[in-house]
Length: 220
Image (cartoon, rainbow, N blue to C red):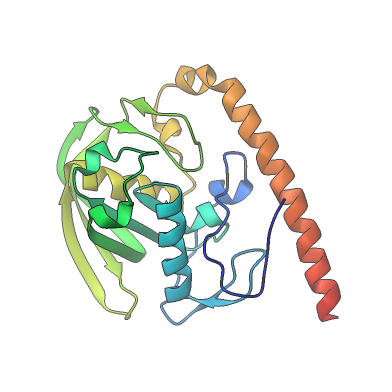
């Protein structure tokens, strides 16, 4: 059941594989924009970013892109944890106690610094829960140019695991899943699991549409 409110939410529902928003190329966003996550009231970009971080921590993730909460804008949040490559999904220790750095990036643009590809890390995705695979080729080192919440242009460099996280999240802004970067037979191996996610996604969207119709009716 979709739960919606006009009050600021603590967390957002995470969209699952099969949701069309996850395949759309996201549009640019500015720090002063007002955003509306479907089913919720208008929020500032900062409020959305903070709620995305809470949503990410709740799901024990390392990054979350705006399309994953139903917003097709070029925004993602991510964190660097202690021992981040061993994120221990599902563990009991509060993730906030292990955070080294938090990142909120608007309109990120990646540049490859080290073209050598790395395939050794295992990747997963909050929008395809329970599926993890090695072999996704990612650049070992990248630079990122982005806008922060204050409207300032920033650049940073990242390597190894953090570089992979940034590449994964920017992929989401372009409608790309990590599974798309693996041979087709890998996706086929998860056909039943992905079909189940698609059914859940369809049900969620139907419930959300009912809620939005009710919201429009109250405002007329």
